[in-house]
Image (cartoon, rainbow, N blue to C red):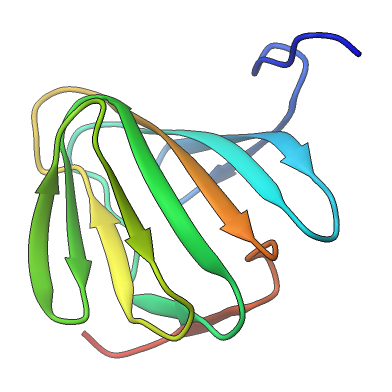
Length: 115
């Protein structure tokens, strides 16, 4: 057993300059630390099986969840049940850093939706 951080975690990029680090990745649970530069966003989508919890570390996240806009500050989180359309945006001038916990893992479970 040893501490886990993003320096030794599997890294990937997504969107327009966004980063993710897999801190826990197994068949039942995914914990990812993510970073979004100012002005970046995810597309509207849902997960058929995975529920997700987003926990903001720094910056302010704007979520659109089932048609409603939610602003989430540091040390706050939002739970997204499976099947609920959502997206995250960084509409602020500072970098957004957050954790996303998915159970089961959301990779391969994503469906793009209009919105």
